[in-house]
Length: 428
Image 1: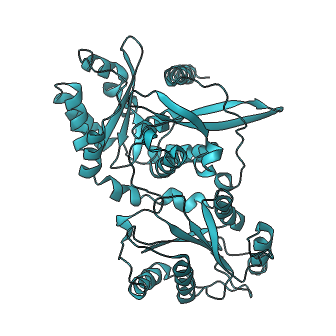
Image 2: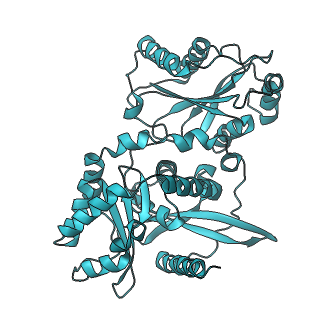
Image 3: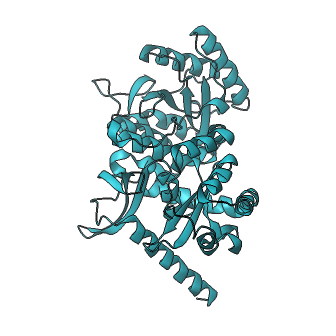
């Protein structure tokens, strides 16, 4: 069992994140302590906020008084609702929050069910509850709970709350909304990328694509995302699904927040040093395209090439699964630009718009310990509930808009980027 404690400043953000899941039938309230409910026992945002208000008003000096706790049992554990409630109450009591107001939600939107608890770390007199030893105390309590309820032991590195077992979306198996939702939630939260195109390239490895829709409806500007399943040739299949239908966690505002965070992170960290060595080695050992892809996969990397109808490569997006970063080859240097790969692969008969085969992706996953790396990436998650834009803003997407083809969309974005670079070079 793994418990993760996130501190924040926005009670409304933490509550609305969970209440939104309830509205989407992806979660339900299991238990509440010292929180007012409706007469029928259902939760109410106004009453919940009113219940917490005296505690928060009693202490205005604590910077992050809100605690958002997730408790995740091992995937093989069968935990009933009653057991979840008992676990939550015991955990809160032993952590010193038993007399605090708190809400317990059971999340069912992922393959692995788990619970979230929202509470505050200041009591009704305004005294801050000591949380200096929370990490070690929490770990000790979860071990005790595992023994009490005969549950599996699960270290954090072995699982991630938001990471289902990722595999390519299977259109024939049905429930496309859930498949796309689980994939998008894990990738948008786990990987770092600086553009929608890079996010789209990452999604394509798992049989999903996304389009950014902008326009005006009823005199009001909107920005939104539409997700679709794709086949092995990168062609859309089935009906597109609005991000707002899946959930705000894969919507336009959250994506923009992720892009900002990723840009800052990749600017401040040496994310290209290792990929350069791996790609350069694969180029030096090049015999054919499949061999090139295999060399990358052995070192935990994938690549998506974009080409025109004449077969010319005009873009190469690399995915570093070890460091969870996505970037265009040119960002590593001129020697990794699209022109270089166009020359390298020009005699290969394979199509230039390559989707890695399942066996290549699995090999990459296995040899780079992708899931362990993924589970350790929690920085964005810890900030998620403090950023009201990621949890409170309603989706602005009112309609699907034009169904652009991926190739035309990619060319348009590249042209815009080149124009911006020229303008910067000229000093505008």
